[in-house]
Length: 407
Image (cartoon, rainbow, N blue to C red; front, side):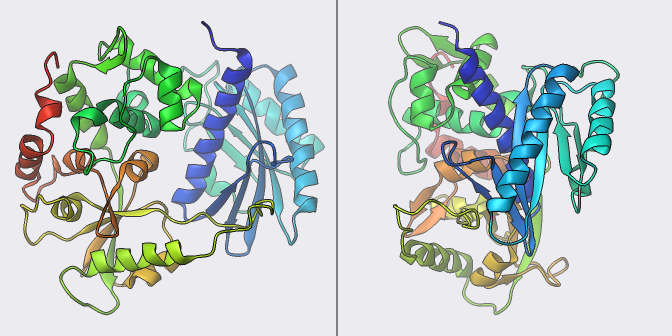
């Protein structure tokens, strides 16, 4: 049964909202996302220091001028009205998201804004990575390239970047979870008849699950008889490994005061304990635009392998996954980026696949730890005997996954 146009449109808007939120978060901004029934013209509130943006996004699949201009005009009006309701100074930002932006459309939108809203912060983005922003302090959001003269070609569905997007990796972990020890991967464990059931378990949109299931099936990695079942696992895992080797943002840090050998685990435990002790917000009060979501965190790579009981490599610097770069959080952990380039004590990773990492993380003695499948992916090509570490994990923790019949 085909999905309704309303679901497709909602999924499109959510996808662009996710994209823009991650761009801000990776740059160290705090991002507040409001429920759709509460947004009142606000999709995102992005703040860094004293600078705050109120962002309203309008999305469309049609790259037509007669559709683009009214949508952008609506976004401008809603963002301006929302910014006036927010206490304190805030910059309204209207963003138009179109699946494929042509050069002529980009020029038309730019001319429209310069003629009718020259003082307004405005963005134009598309699915292939094109981004054009104008407004105070927004130049860093612009992409290096320019839109094509015609419609931009959509990303090929078979590309690793598509098949192994953040949420797709999370859903793949869910489909494989029954063959991974539950103490080493946090995910729902059941069988799913269709994409809708998978979406509910993964807490993602139906469209995201539908596209993922369709892609896995079209490439021969999924059997859909009575239940969804991943097959040809060896080939799929090789593809996943290749996609996982893309450049990761890794930041050297050092201890302000050096302590014991397990200092990182102790610091992370103290950090998450403080978060747990914070009083819960009043459920009756509407969520404020200035509230800041906790910065998710977990041990990664060899530090995670050791915490999960698979210590093999000795002497390597520990890795910590942090959802977004935040000097305040680093300070709470007792870490600093200052002078760390040549005397690092640890590395902080800002992951592209944050949902797949943090949702699947497990807890060891009060410390969040990357799941064993993620560890296997991360260490497999690490120069510090990563291949040997991955082999041990595959044999002792993931044997049922690798030896599954029909894989």
